Amino acid sequence: MSEEEKLVFAAARKDIGAQLFKAARTEMALERYKKVIDLLSHIDEFKEEHKTKAKDLKKACRLNTAACHNRLSQFQDCKKACESVLEEERGNVKAHFRHAQAEFGLQEFGGCMRALRKVIELDPQNREARALLKKARAAQREEDEAAKGMFSKMC
Image (cartoon, rainbow, N blue to C red; front, top):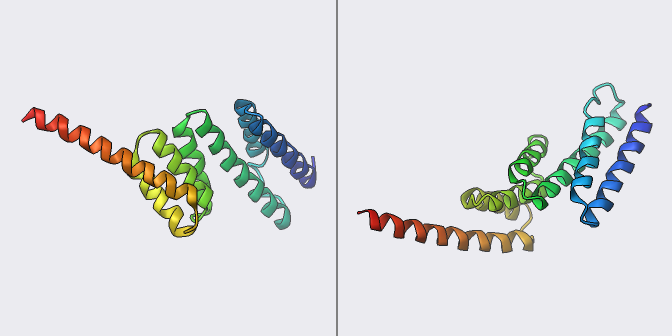
């Protein structure tokens, strides 16, 4: 398969994954995205223009796998997918936001709030991030109150 054929095939697989995700067939979508990532894992030999397209496609699929993992409550896997995107692009808003969602799902509210502050720094108009930050702060307060009550009984 030529470089161009691989890119066309990978883009088609990604599009199928998107359709499956929209149809709430999340596990099947996740498999499609993983196959694209695997297909594009060896692009060192690609021409520069194809390499750029392949990297963009791979990044989109990693972000989509993160969304799938979040939907499936596989929060650790979501964090890993986001971290792989952030290694290459520190300022990726979607990766920071999905990472925050995973932290929230794991009830790691401190990490969630840090990621959300980064999202808001990069995209001050992001309403979803502001809403999740509000929820994370409330959940952290609740957790702190519960811990305070528990520790006060110990003394």
